[in-house]
Length: 382
Image: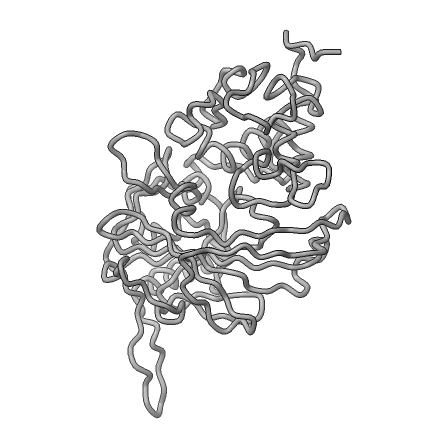
């Protein structure tokens, strides 16, 4: 209990402390994240100007006043390792919502830093910083700002045009060697993934930080504490129930966290349903992959693909129970950039942005789930 109390107190203090530090000789000039003063028309050119984080080889750490967090099931991005930080202006807060991404207040800045290793069998060896993506809640709504790290990993520069970074010789966990074509998204691509197709809604929305995905322990420097409880203690989350009674997403790639079906549906919910839903860009496909969907035909069982063009591999159904090798869902998940047998990679891959190599653990999970599905009427063709 003492560790929990210390963690709560430290996190509450972090939300109000400036990041200028102190010195017995001469204090450095004050430095605080801009909050609501962030000007989306003239964003800072360097990440250091934002006073959010301190870089080191392969890693970043938060400045005081900036809170680290993690997710139960994160988005897959070419095996990039991510450090997630959030700044909420002092005195501001979000109201707990069990069903949607938190409605974080204006001035909130979310910084997600991506680092990459060459050999995914030893992902902490030789890891280098690639980019930091900011999502900033401005007066005009959420807006995305990509920053690209220099080779010495000392500074990241605003890079609105985005960049493709070729990474030859990446070793996947299985030992397979592929060529990754890592995407630093441009601002239009940020808007594409975070788009909300529902009429009358802001052009961009949050994806990862839902209360259920945040409902997990985090090892803060002062002790381990559940993130929802810690955010409540810090005053940046209001009206939240105790974490033990709040909805919680499982860790999809942890075999101990649930059944194969629960884990597979959760992985699809986090990685696909922001598009494949009634409010996402892929709504016209009729393939809706959120956990709230209970009709097997709606989440792809015996469903013929719509508007996939050459991306289906001439397979007849999104999901064929018992036959992952005949399922469009698996075919598109397993497409990868340097596959010589698939010249239509850009039309085949799913998701369409943010991935150029297959996530082997996820595809194995989805394959097992489809293999285990009860027989249905869409008997695969001979």
